Length: 318
Image (tube, rainbow, N blue to C red):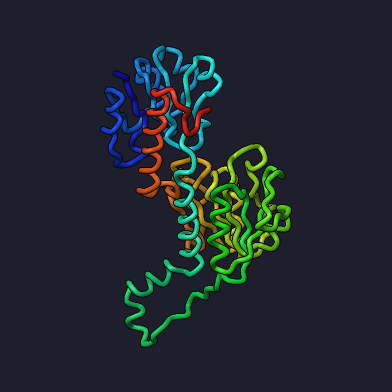
């Protein structure tokens, strides 16, 4: 029987964690503070973490630890080198949320592009009922067809967004943050060209030294004043104070953000100071988190654990 510890189950929602009992005894925690990690994992064989940091300091007493199941695709919260040195396997789950993030990208863009919040309120407030007119043209909106959609980071999610955008009749271009990604289906451009020509720019890139702060005020000034900036990648790729200025000064048309430099978003965040809130859509890092995606993630964790204890190759191991 294995000792299984779930460190931040609350971040995964209402999943059937009892399924883990096929491996042993399960100890569940909603959330775990940094100072609590060492004590909670010291007797574990299996640790499941989403965002809790695991490093040498808090793993050194976990003498029985055999495998860390990362409940995500990214594993930057785990000290991989230390785990390797102690022969601790680290397995993540790739691809479980790709379709979900693509869907959420378009949900936020269309919500903003078609002025859904305004018109929904217009009807529900009874202003429509009192207007005497069958329609309202108070907030102009435009077709996606014929527009240019610039993608920053043409990985699996970026390619998914590109395919859906094509279905809307959009011209797709992309910028490779590494300079190495070549895709014959879409036109690769330099960043300045993408900024200048795109009506919508969506970010689906990882955070690294090349993308950190990429979308700053200088780059936003190169965008069309009607363009939307969409960040479904990592929060620090967009400089939030610069985005507030760019929107309030009508440098760009608006923004859709699902990720932030600090999560949860601080109450004094520059983003919450944006004057015209109709120009922005914010969601609390949920693009990955449909019920279907979380079930795929959990099934991936179970498959990794089964494979590990059968001595088989894991779906993804680092």
